[in-house]
Length: 344
Image (cartoon, rainbow, N blue to C red; front, side, top):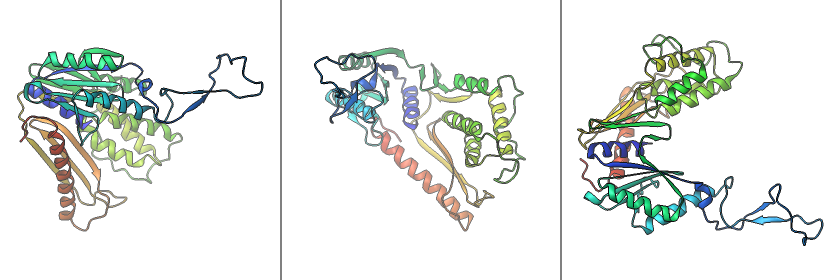
């Protein structure tokens, strides 16, 4: 997802064209390298020349949905087609492919059967689309507007990324669409632990909610800390944990369309900020690290995570936070080298 946000940020800053493609029945395109057999499908007539009592099988020449190797073989075939067309596969993220430089630069991002292509020359993007159509059956979905639950709106001011429809559907499914909005993601007076309150009769409800909220954090940094904090109690949730989750749902009701703005006037400077507390967790006494990374004014990566060990001083906690941020910056800088544009 950091790759996706980085591509969207650069395309907004550079005013690149962005198109979306969809591969029809992607897993059926893979070639099998092993001998794979399957039982006769129901309704298929068995040839009469087979001996009675035998158990006939089918030998597969192409991958099918349900095979463990289907996704790998499908991606391998797409990769081979792109490399043959002159693309270079990024070593930092194997789902990213780049080609050309300057005005002929093209970036292509793959997620299973969804493809995003972006670059300054719209004619070249259409040529890539036609080339891929010779290898696979494609749907040309036009300019990028909706991708993996993300809504992308674009104007001369920049690009706005949100999960508004996903949020409204979540509120409707949980019955909080008509609830009273809350001003903050979490009650600042709430102190959660693993012993207070009654155990939930059905913990699966709490776990489903946390799973849905974790995906929402991909465009909502304002709820990241709270969701990660509540996810620590998924093994044995109690009533205060569920109440805190309901409070978070009421906060989402107040701002269902909040997201990320990537302005077109932004620079291409990488900036990072980090911080940490000291022994804030009352259960484990571990510290929590938080950091965020910007490309100019575009927020592309953030995290709130409990540190793996117990530290003896606040200085050591801060050192761990800086080390985590430096590692993220190094990875992003290496990743940005795949784009043939200078990035400071």
